[in-house]
Image (cartoon, rainbow, N blue to C red; front, side):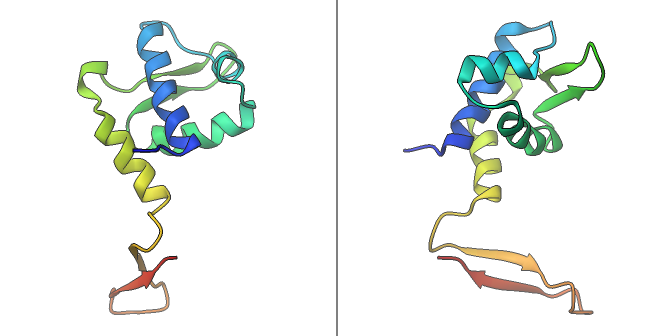
Length: 111
């Protein structure tokens, strides 16, 4: 299985945080270690944090850390998240059409 660059960095970020526990991991340090920009890493971290895998702490002494113990985070969790963000080509994606009052969902074929 080939992972997208974003998925690869998501997994590596989680491993980085697990190794660095209980300390906070700093985004600039992680970005430098992975050879990516801070902004690119922020873009990747946001959905991972919103889905409960990472916790973000704001401020001067802030950073990121695992939102739950490392032994409770599965690779499948990250792969499911990546699949939600970027459906595989040729798969049908479901989205809610905001113009429909009935709450019906529409299937859209992605290519």
